[in-house]
Structure formats: C-alpha cells, structure tokens
Image (tube, rainbow, N blue to C red):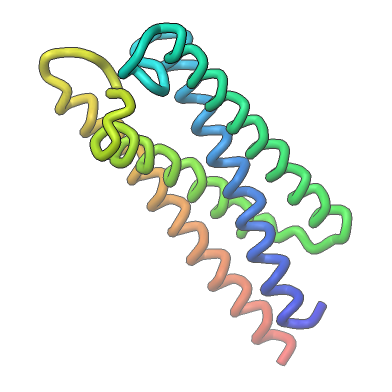
Length: 158
C-alpha cells in the first residue's frame, strides 16, 4: 500500500467510525435521557406531540449515521485498508463531539432543551459537558497515538 493510499484509508477509517460514534452518543441521549428518564425531548419549546416528533427525527438521524458509518468501515475492512487505531480514535471523537455539541449548541445557544428542568441546572450542565470533553480528549489521544504508530511503521520501510 503506498503512503497516500494508506493516509486516505486512515482518514476514511476515522470518519466512518466518527459517524458511528455520533450516532451511538445520540442513541444514548435519546434512549436514556429522552425515553427512560424522560428528562427532556429534543425540542421542548412546544407541545409534547412536537417533542415526541423531534425525538423520532433524532432517532432516525442517529440510525442513519450508525448505518452509514458501519457501511464505510465494512467496505474498508473488505478491501483490507481499515485502520483500527484510527477507527477507535474516530469513534471517541464522534462520541465526544456529539455530547459537547449538544451541551453547548442545543442546550445553551439554541435552547432547544436542557439536560433536566430543575432550579439549579449548573451541576447537570457541568457533568454533561465535562463528560463530552473527557471523551473528546480520549479521541484526540488515540488519534495522536495512531499517527505516531503510522509514522513509526512508515519509517521502517524507507
């Protein structure tokens, strides 16, 4: 495998797994916080019926992301060009990106919903966003480790 093709396969591995990670974190949010705990819906600024509709749309989008990501990863595996270290990095980057995006953009900027509707929301916001940040940092660490491993192995052949 030449170096350009290997770099492209690594990026494709990362982005395929990124989609799976985004979809998985959206599923965790949807299933646990929207359905099991019933703390919020995706859009809480209207009726319950609209809230349920937006939850269904989020659920559909997360399933599309998971399926699209897995098809991309399976195709890479079929051609023998899947980079597992890059895929794991992408998976964690996807998980953390969704969590932080939801916590900052959906919760605070757009005010579509809150984690929970209580008097003191700050502890919930801190835990929500800190969890997303930790997961994102794990993804960046794994990506750095994957790049270092790739650089070391490519130096062996030059």
